[in-house]
Length: 124
Image (tube, rainbow, N blue to C red; front, side, top):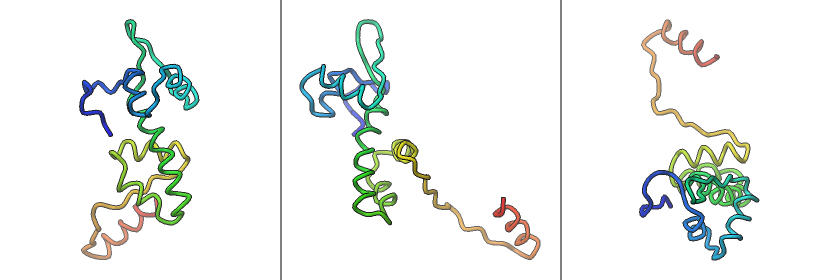
């Protein structure tokens, strides 16, 4: 849900946050942001927040719902629908979960010397 209409600075006005979280009232938006420990920053005369913080808060509830419904596969399911890897990893860190990294390559050894080195590296 990265806002394509936004200026790519990574910040949102409170009006833009109200559109994302579907709240009409700016005081209600401020209350929601404070309840989620998202700091409201002031630049010039405008209030803004960081887009990544808002998106992580929204996704955090989705991840927790998936965890409740599918305790064995929720991380893989959430990874499929997360907006990007940064949000995926931040949400997992925020809810106290380890990030699942799958290896990109399978290592093949060419002999006993390589096998010994690989086993030493894997034991670190």
